[in-house]
Length: 155
Image 1 (cartoon, rainbow, N blue to C red):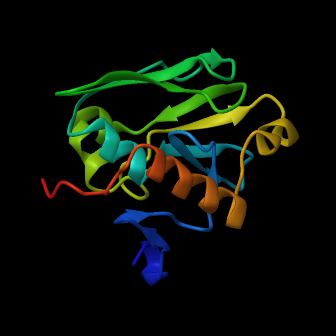
Image 2: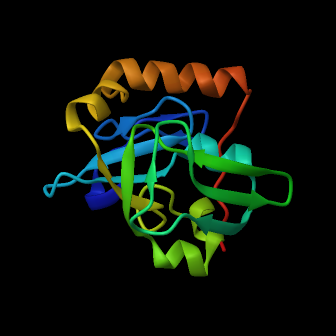
């Protein structure tokens, strides 16, 4: 069950909400009424990363081109950048994740969103994202490629 009691598709223990947009690598994106997008780490990506112990974000107002890091996450086994899925300016970072990075492993689609960004070009942003059956099929292939079984940390 996802937010608001919606049934969320699951594959190998990984939640794959069908109402989100995906970069088909690490991130989900949710469009907001004000033209911004909320971004977060997918369930498969948080599983692959392991227990996140540090989250360092670029400051709001920072512009990043697609592929350039918006943030750096660190776990006991991994340090990696969170690449921008499209050209955008950071509007807000999630203070809850800054204060408790491990929240990413507990609630990746709800409380642990990473940031809100304003795309340079909304149409170009959508062109770089996928959703629906195409996205779910690609995410399942990603899960298979890395032989993942998703797990959530409890604290």
